[in-house]
Length: 447
Image 1 (cartoon, rainbow, N blue to C red):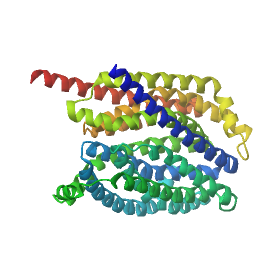
Image 2: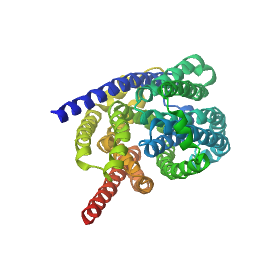
Image 3: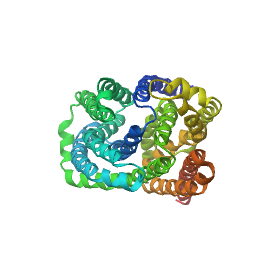
Image 4: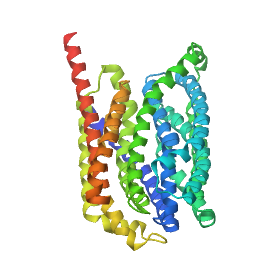
């Protein structure tokens, strides 16, 4: 009876997170509708998507890497110890953010010339301007990852789920107010200001979480052991996670680089199709995997390895939802694209191609549904190299399949390569996790 109540309570909590994600989802849809209406599938938006891919790595993905490292390292700490561990992490993250922001301004022009050779001089110049605005967003985006990680450890998930909605509102405001005057720079400015607003909200929530602590003195004693040493350990661990994210950037860059060779607007069409797939991820997959991560870390610290039986129910449910999403996208892709994006400068002629991309890439949804849980399980046992191996397989598979499939099937070939690469990467991640669990069980039997 206790187990039934526990399961019911857990799913009720996940349902609340899904509601919050739904709000974020609606606002994200609104953002995409506004962007589609103002910019359509244009050469200007192609440049924005290319530069945004680099920002997503330096800002959002490294922020996610920091978040994952914080949860993995801090899930078993007492609250007072966590407070001072967090201070060291925030300082280290802020310094790293400043360096990465400067790096993004320097590297972006080279990145565009190497990976997007079809861009003309006007597009390259627009890309350099966008890089400056996105650099301003890098620092708060990385810090948001660190603060989210600490909030998840203390059980505060709500703001993490609605942060994307807040960001969308700010971006919508900038696009509607400035989009027709300054072009895609307005989107980048919206991301910079939106990340600052989100960071302020997360810090306010974290301050409230720690305000009631009365054992700060003991925490200070533990923290004084070696702030520098813990900072170096945090950087070393995060560095491996960042390597995995860098390879994921390679996946995105490979896809968009090949897309840029298939005609103006193709990069934007892949961007719109991907945003629809992210809807399912934001609504269902992310709430489940995010709330499970701290629990997995604590369970593994107690038992020594992930309990497969504990994860099986979540994985099965997510796979069913992923398959359902794939079926919906396969049969209704054109109607969905027309309903969501056919406004303003998004033309009827853009619908069939975007729908084709969505139909094929949507086949990756069942794999995406469980991919985050597998990755978090690796991080929970402090195994940071398997995601690096998995993303290397993903990038290599995508590149090889693009070379083979694009000459024969054009856009559908690129979409097929993307879906197949995703599937192989997730299967590889699950296989590596299964091998590790079997090894742990064998070692326990021998002892």
